[in-house]
Length: 358
Image 1: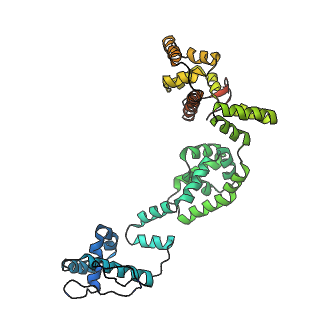
Image 2: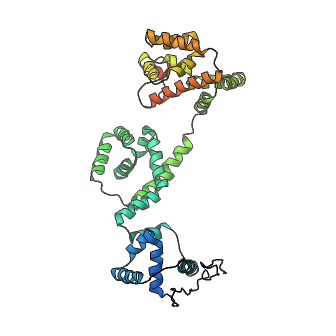
């Protein structure tokens, strides 16, 4: 293969076909193999640390002694050396980049513990996704599956998933079985890699695949979330058309939606918590588009002075854009959902019945 590389002086050089190049030391003498190695490591600088770590003490001594005798190194010498190096590596070496070879290479430059941790991280996406997905499976569903497994297998699984989720699953298992699992977890030492991989494969083929196929999300619930994300005009347009073509579906979606009007159904403590996290200008905008009944609910959960000031601010706003009102109301709804997700409030659409915790 022809080379397109050139020396520092602009002359073309060979070497990319794997042939050895003559590297002049500037005094009319070619560098030998040890000198080339020294020049290569000198050129790499700090990047050569892994190479140094793989050398024996005798090799380090020989190369170091050669390095201090190199004298002045020109750019042409370095350029020619790297062309030769790349050429020999590409033409004479055959590499198989895989987990086993990579792991073996790393063991030569770091401890086995560090290698094991790094390789687990590299291979992690499938494994971590598996345990993350398992942590998201409803505890009752996971419990029903695990109670038919061996206690040791259950112990391994519970040791890998989210701690809080593991505790809920453990509490649902039969008493004798759960106690045996606890004993196994207490006696458990480091689990061999092949055991973990076998458990993952079993979970993936026998459990998670069935979960994915059997737990298709309710279409009405999904559509309710989509409708929640619409602006008011779009929501009204779609809902009106849907009520004409599929009234039952429209009613189901409306029952599942959580809207600004549902905020008035919050208990007083929850509504007051919500109001503490909302800027007054956004609250005023949101209430500009609310009916009198909804405004009254909000005002009644504020001090008389704060309610009066807010009413004055709303009057001073004058006409406002419908989009700004929609954005402000959406902000209140999303803030309520965030508070509910943190456990700060409980939101319900029916004054304490059929609580919807987001």
